[in-house]
Amino acid sequence: MKASDLTGRVVVTRADAAPRGHVDDVLVDATYRQVLGFRVTQETCDQADALPRDSATAVGAGALTVNSSDTINTEGCCPRR
Image (cartoon, rainbow, N blue to C red; front, side, top):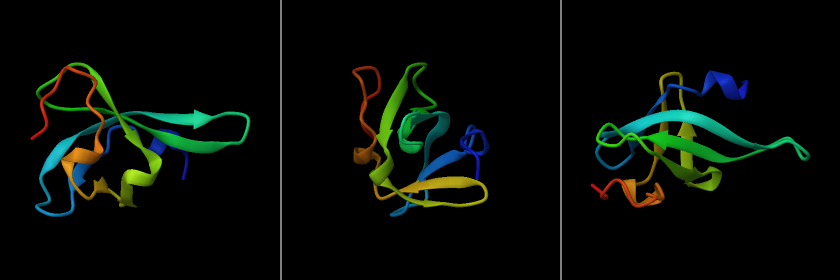
């Protein structure tokens, strides 16, 4: 799977399958060719938030899954839901 394939996928929580935003970008370490994390844009905020790679529990055909919305590191714009 290419990193560009993840862009636009919905980010949902496992507990309640609630959408928490969309993958805006994939953060890659070019030297080691590893995914470091994701930028997630939440519906209520124009600013992208960080989601560490290890916080993603699954990547499906239409969504990226996280345990809870607390795993998305908000950067001061969006309150946690």
